[in-house]
Amino acid sequence: MKKSLNWVHNLNQTVSLKFDGYMHSDFVKEEEIKSSLLKNIISSVNVEKSSWDYHYNLHLDFTLTIESGEEQIHLMNISESIPYVRTSYHRIGDKRELHHHHKKVKQSLNLTWLLRMISSSNVSQFTIDRYDESCKTPCRNNDVKKLLEFHHEVYHFAHWVKSFFEVVHETHQIYEDGSAKTNINSPPQIFADDIFIPIVPVIQNNSTTLQTEDLDKLLKLHIKTLESTTTAAMDKYKKSKFTTSHGMILQIISDHLTSLSEQLFASIGYVENMLETQLIEAIGKQIDSNDFEKF
Image 1 (tube, rainbow, N blue to C red):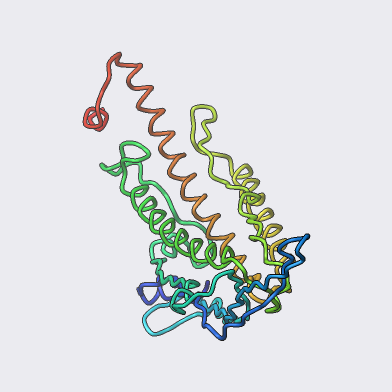
Image 2: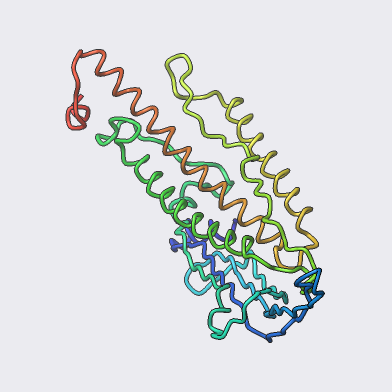
């Protein structure tokens, strides 16, 4: 964090969070499995039936870095590979059909605005200039506009990272030890819903400003549930050879980031709509967005 803050505050550089993920499979061999079936109990005629096992190597590579110019901070650099088998009861002639396990995601999130909102002592510096001419309502001011623009980018980034790991974890017939007799992995349990979201539109004593101790309670609960959830995920997947705990953590956090952004959009919209409703009730007539701006 200190290095990233220095890039922005002292060197005036742009800082980005970058994710690069690639999952693909290599076909290894085809194996025919023959078995005898009793066709008719009376005639006792055995019929031979075949199935085919298609052996693959499934590869997963992903990196998460913070970058500024040529400098990088490596947060994660994971490379995993696992053999597995797909069984089919008809022979696949075109081996290109077998290369269906493929997913590539490359995303970048500009962190510069966020880091400018954090002081060198890790204290938030975000404020709303209520005396600025642009400051009309929660949605109609430059400060919140920049906040919402950043969270739209966060949502887009997190959505694509989340989608990558969803495909990884839901890829069917991934065997932990490569054996065709091993049970197929069940889809991993997603823990993101267990994390508290500390964004709520609170109106108290005609003020939208919470007391410091209340803010501390919300943030502490957020940190507590985030830590307990990621710890539970690490414990659940620490022995996995492919559905790694690192990938699981990224999926959980990405899912949580999308929820945080959605809740922020909804909360600001809620307050905006509440003010508009109060204004309509006060003047006794319906107004459009331009009229709302004037008032």
